[in-house]
Amino acid sequence: MNQAARGPVQVQGEVLSNKSAGAYQHLTLVAPGVAERFRPGNLVALAVGGALSDRLLRRGLAVYRARATGAYRSTVEVVFPVTEPGLGWLAGLPAGAAVDVVGPVGRPYALPKEPVACILAGHGHAAAPLFSLADRLRERGCAVHMLLTATSEKTLFGALEAKRAAKTVVVATLDGSVGMRGGVAEVLPGLLAKTGSDVVYAAGPAPTLHDVAAAAEEQGAWSQTAVDVGSVCATGACQSCVVPVVGEDGVSRMARTCAEGPVFRGDRVRWADLGTVPVDGWGASRAEVRR
Amino acid sequence: MTVDLHTSLGEVTLANPVLVAAGCAGAGREIGPLIDLAELGALVTRSVTLDPCAGGPPPRAVETASGLLRQTDLQSAGLQAFLATELPWLAQRGVRTVVSIAGRTLGEWAELARRVGLSPGVTAVEVNLAWPPDSVAARDSYQAGKIVAAVRRDMPRGIPVLAKVAPEVHHVVDLARAVVKAGADVVVIGHGLPGLVLDPSTLRPVLGGGAGALGGPAVHPVTLRCVWEVHAALPEVTLVGGGGVRSGFDALAMLSAGARAVQIGTTVLHDPGSPARILTELHDELERRGISNVADAVGLAHRPEGDPR
Image: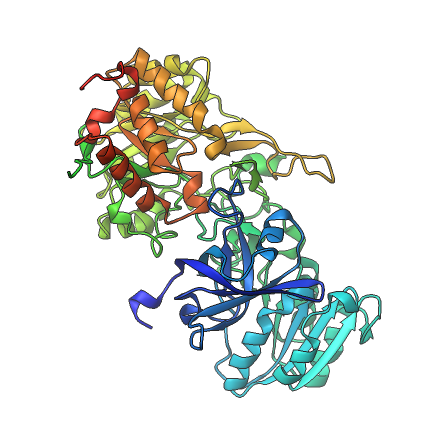
């Protein structure tokens, strides 16, 4: 990769298609330069509200698929639930509308050097980036197993596509409306043993990722977890989207999910301390220790 | 017509008056892939503390109408790491660098000043008087003056000291007078305004740190008036204005109110490519008005209409 092709770009994207996919919105943007630099796990950060917007944070969304070539040149796709007005604005855009895109942003999933067996575990729409990842892993000769979880059948994402993307697919819902009843904590340990997987790649809300990290560690597997970033500046400059992560040296630091993340090794994230600055962390102030 | 955009801060001449504000471009590397940093008038680094500082608990930023409320409590790798890696990175790329420093005690301020002042690649230093969050220095003339004096004493003469004070609506002139008396070469008016946002479901503060500093277009008229007020009272003092600048016109307004340079803050967090756009727009605004030198725009709003200079 040459110098010019590294790092994110900021481009005026254009909506190619925007449709609902079950409980979610599936937005495809023409965004020259983004797909060329994309690796699975990367995000795009979309400005919302147009040129006169009074909303000043970008929405950081994991890329579902990115295509560098094709009839529409470079496209990126994202899948999201409409949980707030900014995402509602994105969901309402007609084809041809302009969207300011910064991407790809963040650290992607680390791919194994050897063709190992892997489980790709995703909860709800957060599973979207795992499909691009599955393609890359299969190219490397990895055996890809998928675990899709959701609260209920309504919020499950990608079950049909998973059958094409993975060797085996397990579906589980918390209410048991489709597939097994339960979540990652109930299903993943058995699946790890059955498939003999060495790595779990995961995306979902923090409690799901915590369960993934715990199950993987229990069975001696690696885990790579993508933390949801929410609204961001997209460059790491604002230092808002921080989580406590243990470094190689064993010291905890506040790591930015949009820059050092969103993908972290599951065993490195201090899941129980999310939303806090651990008092034993690097640079934690004496005042906070006293508190 | 070409417009001469050069401006000066103390003894330092900058190629143009568009600066990126502290805490809005990281240490430069973060937005390096997205803009040509060497084209900026100057980049103000995120504030450097003497010791590593983990910052405050998240969430650290929340949107408001046309604004951003932030409380990071300064996450910083510390002075040693900054001087070893971040500053050389900027120097290698020819970026005009204003190093923002933040101390807790007069001893810390003095050490920061000494070590930053001796480092190559420093265009100026900016004294961040608004840290820690419970500090009153950014809005208290006596405290601000003591800190600025400590920094100035240990800073080599050729490096301008910029004192960043809060846009305190009722006594910003007193603040500016105090820091200038204490040795500041330039007064920066541009900290966020103290603010609060409550969570609609819990009715508790959204930010992990409780209250925060409000920046963005919402505060632009407030800081603009502060710049206006200080320039009217102290016309010989070099001012830098920041606060919600998002267009070339906003930048021109700051200059016209009396600033020699502007800082782009929250707008960079929203749109990393904005500094180059704002500079182009500023150039066009000046050209359209037949102003051939940016220095002629400084304080323009205080002169009667039709005044040729």
